Length: 264
Ligand code: ADE
Figure 1 (cartoon, rainbow, N blue to C red):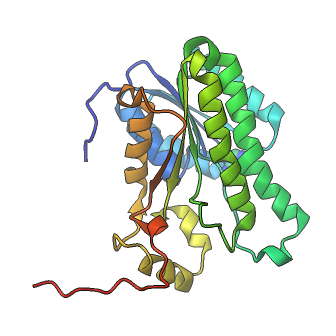
Figure 2: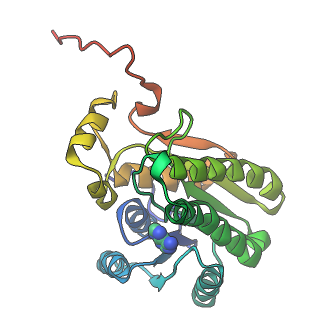
């Protein structure tokens, strides 16, 4: 589906972490189609290869850079490499992240720290580097991909703690950096059909799907469109907000099950 006008992002430069797969890749392709120059980064070479192949096929002007966002020196090098190639960064999508399911009681410090380091610290290293090296001079938009945390995140407590912190960081920076013309936003996708879902047991996924009022999982393009809107001039008055796109899952607690009504 073509949602946005051709050329909407002409001349813009977008840096997308975790840009080789899933939501990051879909957003990279959509923004490239709209005229943006694209930098993707990822910790895994096979993800860079898959993102690069898709961007090449789409005829995009892009670079793909290896980067572990947990390492601030690597983040600095990555941002410098994007600036050396394209001269500016207008859009930063902090999409890289992840978690592993574990009861909180048995979480080892190593696992806890790894999840906090990637989802919170990595997001911050990237955000600060892009802002100070480019956006403070030229303005821009930062979109942070998180998960819904408002009812807690039992089973992935480490990730919920990190993501809730990113949502709060988004609000602080939106207010502090408005003076530089930098908008900062969070987006919380619900259950989206991407490579990342494969790590969860199929039986668990069936339970999750039953609790989505809209009756289906989402797809990466639906999130890419929302991110593209937020990064576009159409959202110029929009900053600090958290957008949840989850088919209503956030609103449904099944103490009182939703009764299915037969259609005529
Ligand atoms: N995706 C998941 N973890 C990552 C990390 N540490 N660096 C970059 N991309 C990632």
